[in-house]
Length: 463
Image 1 (cartoon, one colour):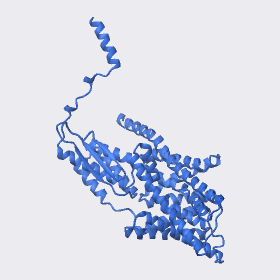
Image 2 (tube, rainbow, N blue to C red):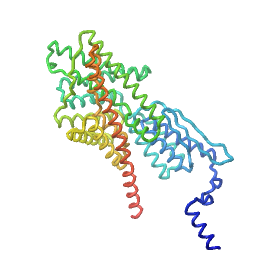
Image 3 (cartoon, rainbow, N blue to C red):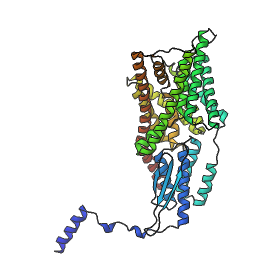
Image 4 (cartoon, one colour):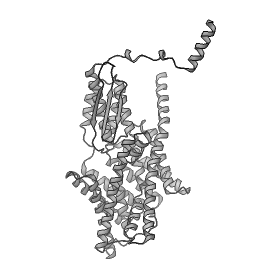
């Protein structure tokens, strides 16, 4: 009988879980409430700072859990939305839960501060004490943006120079594109000081770029020297890339893939609204130019690129400019430049293989983000920083402009109207492909990165 009973117990244990094998939560050590509040407050402040400088919602949630767990507060429940962060910690059945909430301001990319915050999280996991971590965080929070405003305006101007080089523009048009971009950047900064919503700043910036392109076209028609081969479409395309470069397309797509639907929805709506601002500014500029007799025509064919060496020089300039614009340090700038060239090489290879512009763009973004996440941790640079800078050269600024110009100039012609809508849909497909390729590269590279890190740690322990 005993053997039969023992056999039955083994069979049942192989099928069902024994409740007695689970640890009793009532036996957990009760943490002092004051200490718990200090830890949660620090974790939330770090999370708020990470969100404010452009980190993804998943990275913010993981950083909050890591900081709280390293300081003895576990488990915690973290809720990250587009404009708030909530953390809840339930100590014991007889104690009230500790729940804190912080409102997050609109994100402004600062990849140098993002890098320092990620390093602080790693130091806390390495044994940094609470008071030391609090003091270190306050020092990072008070750190100003790395570059002065005038230098950022020049970086934005050189971004347009990179786009002009990418399309093989003449030196004169390259200079005009630089002036147009700097003018748009200064107009946006002025509106920012006046606390005007960024939506209207996008409209004004796009209008300024379009107005300068129309004036350049008019001067070329009047026979002004050095403007005989003026290509105003390149000037506007460079301006569109400038307006769209500061948007966190990768972050929005990554939030959606990671399951943070509310945060992703907020970011996507913000992206759509700011893109609409660019559209309104360009359409308004084209309409005013046509009313003044300064309108200009552009071919419905895709804008031709320059020579391959010139393309890579342009990509290099764009990636460096975007990295500086986002406040990256020297190491991040160098990695961004290298990944930008890798992404463009992937794009050219895909396009040469007949994959089409959208699929080729996704391939370039996937290769850059996959390599970026593998080397980012080893070189202590934020992966989202280098990935963002790498994909900007593939932003479809020229296609957006051609589609808008066809819509404005259709004047009731169904054929031109359909052609303009199709061009804009193609540009949107490229944007979605860039976001999807970048997110897929990060998703595929993360497990391989973790495996490589665990092997390095195990080798260090063996030694």
